[in-house]
Structure formats: structure tokens, C-alpha cells
Length: 291
Length: 257
Image (cartoon, rainbow over all chains, first blue to last red; front, top):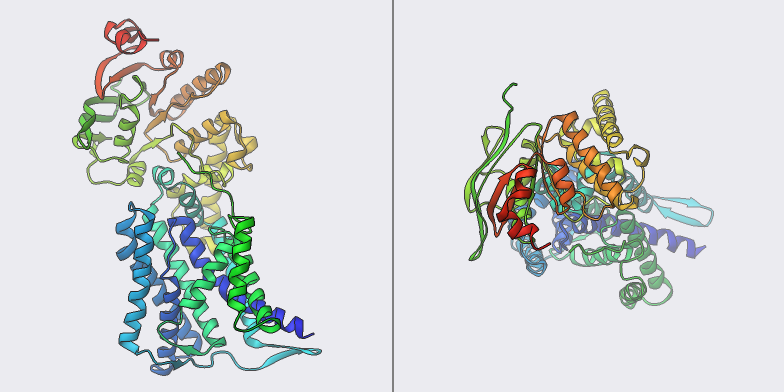
């Protein structure tokens, strides 16, 4: 029975990874770049929720919504200032810029808010459901539900709205999309906005589970979620879900049964094995390079 | 006969890549309902001209006038909104989308409902989406693709993909359609069918069509006026008959064949 508890906790942790991974995977799919500053948007999101609740005494839900909106805007600003001027540059330049933006955000946070830990407020009550001998916390259940809801809305958005359709067109062929009257720059901005908004939601869920806020908070979940995105097949939305949840389960189970210290090593070792067997990730498509 | 409307005019258009002049002194006019051809040996600058007209490249010299409007500081997607649509030399469909979705994507600017409308499926959304769907199916019917509306674009046979590219370009409501080697890789009967379809498109939509093609039978059979390019310069302009008998053209282009 303990196994089942671990499994559900793993799915919950994986749901947070999946939500973050969506940001990586959508941006990669459309702008063909790895936005390494994505993890740090999570950190900013966490600080905003923290200040909204403690400094301004706003209700929890409102604080989260404000955090989502600010992160959304931050995503658009980062894209406009740092990445848009590099649209025609080599992917290596963009990658280095992304790492630069990541350090910039971390250091700004350190400058404004110091490097000391802030204790994240308790945003979801501590209770839990019991099913026989298994008990599952509210947080776990809410996390999984939020993740499923986001997946559902996002899938509908991408498949059933014209912006979603434009996003798919841009991800396949930017130039052809442009010549069909699609505003590619605006589509990329929207994608960054969605990814960053999701990062804010992820920050609320992540910090509810690990309630400490500090400037490098986003690095580890960021890298794990990036791994999840690659694991599931980068560029694929269902891939982010599958990759995130697999990663969460593997991490939780190896912490429970093998070793807490080795759990990250095990996660990354499995990633390497998957990529050796299927280089495009679990749900990734083979991309034919256009000449 | 009433005066035909001038759709596009290029005046002394030119572009340099580094020190190399790819196109120079390109003067061209095309009127409503006209089918014109752009021919010339490989590397003569034909596709470069398409890229200039659609603002994929910014011209180094000269100007483009589309429907009485000078195209200066406009980006590619705006050129499309103003009325130029094109196809590509190597097919560039949205392969992971269905045949109908390819066409619908090109109609993105037809609707003005908000994200709210699309999430809550309001009446406005349904009305406009239905209109779009009907227009898309009508287009697909012209190209004999209506039965494949729900298949993936990549699953179509080669000829079908070529036709879908034209349908997708038409979906943007152009006044000028640029076709880059529409008959490339088609067999004789497919080419013949394509000729009829292009004429039908011209008659139905009364638009101007400019096409690049290597298949001389195709060009001579469909174009009313032909411009011959050589080394980025205009070598000759005329009717198919005139071009066929022009000694300069024969020497530069047809003569070697």
C-alpha cells in the first residue's frame, strides 16, 4: 500500500514538472530555442505570490492570479528584449543569451530580495483524504487536477482556436506561415506568454510542496522539467505530460526505495538510456530537415 | 472593352547579395485576370523576384506598387494581407495538419472573433467558423481535394500536395497569385489538369497569376504574356508566339535544349 502512496506522490510531483515542461516544449516547438530562463520565471512567480500574500495581505487565489499575469508579461518582455533581436542569429547565440537572462533574473532577485530563504505561505490546507490505508494530501490531489485541467485547456487551445492553429503552422514552417498572412512575431510572443503564465502556476504548486523561496529556486525544477520535456519528446505537448509524470514517478520511487541522494542521478541516467534508444524522446516526431 | 485594373507594378527593381547583383532593373506590370510567365535558365533570378515581391528579401533598388499602394516598410505577413499569395518551389505545406486545416490556417485573418468567443463557442464564433469551413470546402472542391479534407496534408500524393499549396495560397484572398514551378514533378496528364485548374481559378476569382515554370509546353499553353530573365536582367517580354521566335531567347535559353 505504501507503494501506491509513493506512486500518487510521484504523479503529483511529475504534474508540476509537466506544467513547467510545457513552457519549455511550446517555446521550443515554435521558436526552436531552449529558453533556459524559464526556470527563473518560476522563481519570480514564487516571490510575487510571497509578497502579495505577506506584504499586501491579498487573498491566496488573487495573489496567484496576479503572479500569473506578471509572469505572463515578464515572458513577453524577455522575448522582446533578449530573443527577438536574435531571430536570425545562430542557435548557439540564442542559447547563451538564454543562460545570460537566467543569471540576470537570479542576480536581480538576490539584489532586491537577498539570498536568504523566505518561508512560502501555506496556500493549500494540510488535510488529506484517506482511502483505506492510503492517505493522500489535498495538495497532491489539487496538483494532479490542475495539471490535467491545464493539459485539457491547452490541447483544446492548440487544436481548436485560430491562434492555436497559427502556432502549429509557425512551429512547422515559419516562412510559409508568414507568407500565409500569419503574424509570426506575435505568435511567438503569445507562446512565451502562455509558457510563463504556466510557470507561475507551477511556482504556486511547487512552493506549496517545498515551502522555501530563494533566488536559485527555479534552477532544479527548471532542469528537471527540461529533462522531462526532452524525455517525452521536445516540441510535443502530450510528451511534456508523459515525460513530466514519468520523471516524477521515477524520482519519488528511487527516493523511497533506493537512495535519496542518488535519486537525481537515477533520473538522469534513465534519461540518457531513453535518448540512446529513442533520440527524439518518447513521443517525439522525427523531424525531416528541410533543405 | 473596359480598362483592366493594374494589380502589380515593379519599377527598376534590383537586389544585390554582397557584391553580386542577383536581379537588376526589373520592370513588370500585371493586370487583373492575366496569367503571366516568368522563365529563364537556372539562376536567372526568378525565385529571387518572388522573394522580392513578397518581401522575404528587401530590394536594394526600385519600388513595388500593389493595387496603387507602394510597398515600402511592410513585413511579409502584411504583404500577404495586402494581396500577394504564393506557393513554393519545394512543397512547404503544414504537414502535421489536415488538408482542411492547411486552408483554414491561411484564412486566419478572415475572422474577428476573440479568444473569449472561441473558448465559449459563441454564436459569432460558430457563424464565422461555418463560413470559413464552407469557403475552405469550396476551394478544396475546385482542386478536387474535398474528399481528403480530413487527411493529413503529408498523406496526399505529390500532385495533390501541389494542388493543396495553391488552394492554401488562394485562401488568403490574394489579388496576385505567385506560383513557383507548379507543374514540377507532375506527369503529362496531371500537368494538363493543372493547366485547366489554373485557368479556372483565374476565371472564378478574376485574379492576376504570375508563374515560374520550366515546362515550356505548360508555359506556352497557359500564359498570355511571358517575361524572360537571364543573369538577373530582362531579356525579352512578349506573347508565347513572340518569345518562341525571339532569336535572343532561343540563343540564351531554348537554343541549348
